[in-house]
Image (cartoon, rainbow, N blue to C red; front, side, top):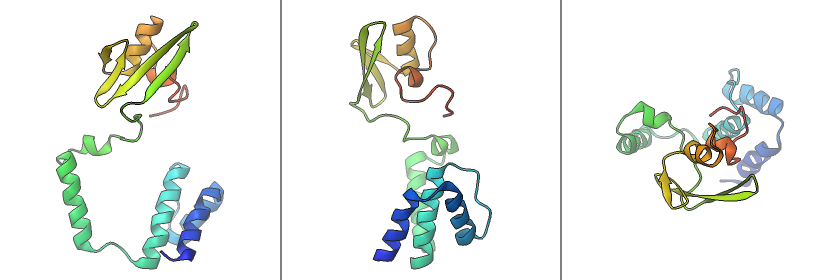
Length: 148
């Protein structure tokens, strides 16, 4: 990548959201979608490169689609599931509750708390508190009221 392209992409992080929306209008010649800032930044970065270096070749697009099919078997529900919302396996989540420190280890297919496997953080939060909690909120991974 040339320095000017790298510099343009780097400035996206410090650009205000209204200015990102303006850039979207200039680069895509459409109104920006009502997506979050991170989405706008990533799509604008891609578009800047696309305009400079050209689009992907049809053969490359077909290959990427085939790889995607191999990974998810063509199942749309798998494709739509977010993968970046889960902490990396081996991560330790620590929460103090009523003066007691509770430690949960993230596993590849669930969680471990006090030597027992759990499928969800909510089940662990319920075990700790005795009441129904959103496990992501209880362990501070998401703010209360935040969407998934």
